[in-house]
View 1 (cartoon, rainbow, N blue to C red):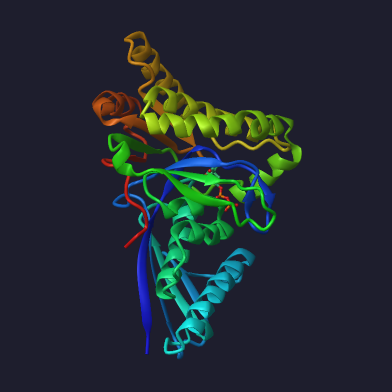
View 2: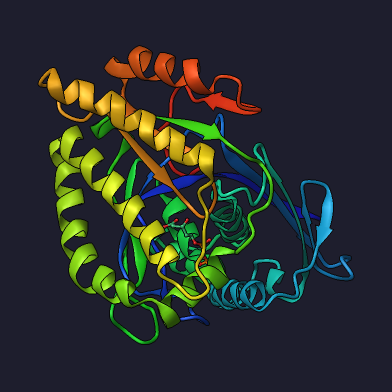
Length: 349
Ligand code: DP6
């Protein structure tokens, strides 16, 4: 007797960055964030989970290798999901007692893991939604996003497609710290993303430890979370709703710079971008200088997470201009990859 469920979860790339926790156990952030969900054809995690009374232990496989489930965050996530399954079983005693059984979780990424490509976001989102599906949990996507958040903060945003906000919330128990949809992909379908894989190596400082170094040591960080991000959170949602690419790009670029600035302001300083990353920034600036001179405003926005790889957002009508320029200079990069269709629906499967 085996029961199973499969889901895919997409990667999301923040345009307003989550960096800093006010509660490291519940993964509650020091600021709200915004992201764009990428096309699952290119970047996604596929997770299949199964359960049965004959499974002697719970096991997790990631890209064919066994990984431990014995990490505090995974333990917490599994416990929460089992509690919710118990509620389902209590309501309908004819259902099989999944909450008593072990799980086999098999997960695969179609992109390099831990290379600053937000693999933890898709991974944890798939982990949680696969089990929620198997358990037939009645909770909404925003409710499930709170469980994913406990696994990895940015994962909560991968529960939705299109443009997504993670509202930081205020409550100590985290019950108001959840992901919500700002707008579906269909609202602004001609936004695209190109990913320039500068390096597929694992990053030096994990986001989890890096952000707490910043929280504990950076003065600039206080200014970022108090003065800069609250206003930007409102303005960026507004730019998305108005489909104002110039404003969206301006804030996306500024927020990437602000995030890397607070990393540099930390002790010891944290560097995620390398010389190639910086050259890409210069080139995007040149592209934008030209489009501003032509009266078009900004046409390309770069953003970098906790790694050297660039994500460039642009509108479809400018694709040839932007990609041909980037390709001319960076086409020889080992993992150059341009995505055809960046945005996609959420994890519903
Ligand atoms: C720079 O979500 O990976 O990508 O909550 O500790 O798992 P944990 O951190 P994680 O941090 C992501 C940081 C970021 C910005 C972002 O995605 O908003």
